[in-house]
Image 1 (cartoon, chains in turn cyan, brown):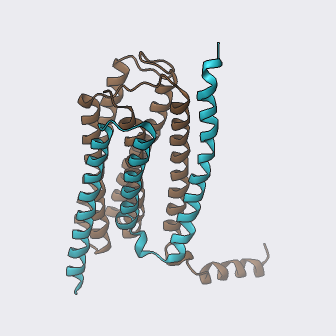
Image 2 (tube, chains in turn purple, cyan; image 1 turned 180 degrees about the horizontal axis):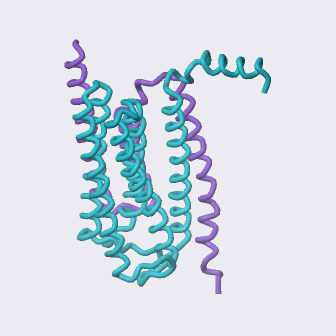
Image 3 (cartoon, helix red, strand yellow; image 1 turned 180 degrees about the vertical axis):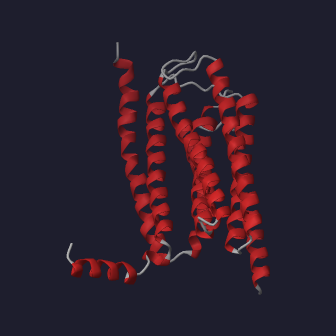
Amino acid sequence: MNTAEKTSSSLTTDIIVYIAILALSGVQIVLAYQHAEGAQLLIRMLAVAVIQAALGVTYFMHLREEQRSLRLALIPATIFVLLMMNMIWSDSFRLEHMRPLIK
Amino acid sequence: MSDTHATMGHVGGVMEASPFSIPSKKLVMWLFIISDAVTFGACLFAYGFLKNASPDWPEPFKFSPSILNVMLMTFVLVSSSLTMIIAARAAKGGDKPTALRWTFITVAGGILFALLHMREWFGLIGEGVRLFQNPWGSPMFGATFFAITGLHLTHVIGGVIALTVVALGYKRGRYNADDIEIWSLYWHFVDLVWMFVVPMVYLLNVAR
């Protein structure tokens, strides 16, 4: 495959990813108008957003073309910090359940 | 500093391998992006915390105009990512006029996004939403809404300015294709953050 063909095929891939990200945004809109319970809806929405972000980072930002060491330096640390932030939820539910006692 | 130290420092700088085989400025951009991703993550977690703890959290976003406007904004921002890819690719291939043209199309997309965002803001302000009060419920709604969308809008405006400066510098020969590629990373990141802002801030609060 020559350079021009490579450029053309990777642009085709980028356009497919672009359409996929837009389609997933459409899926989020459809999900928003389904009568799902709050936590279920949040999980579905975030799952779609994570897929969109993964597509963007992998193809638009070309992280797949970088060295594995760079991917390992960036991604696990970010995911770890974001997962650690989930510790706040217990306090959020505590506030919700304490509210009826507030005068 | 002694001559020995100066020489060693100089030689060390020249011989040091580029970390992860990418230019240092690209690594700096990646590090900025992950720290900024965590900042946005913290803001969205704080938003979720307050929404969860508030029984009267408002759900003000009607399909028209708010959700339609958000759909249009998403289309504009994701499309501007595609135009930025084309610009970065052209810059890498040495096609300066094409790279400049597509970079400025991206800038135009960013400006259009910012204008649509301001329209959304002014619509809500017109309905009585302020930083610490609104007509519907929890007073923290306005503070969190304007903080998160404002932080994102600041990134978009910052990106528009940076892309313009880099494109003009690239035209004059001050910057090269690497700089266009590095700022394209930033632009894609701003796009990806929007993918989380839309469901968390807008779609979980649609008026039914």
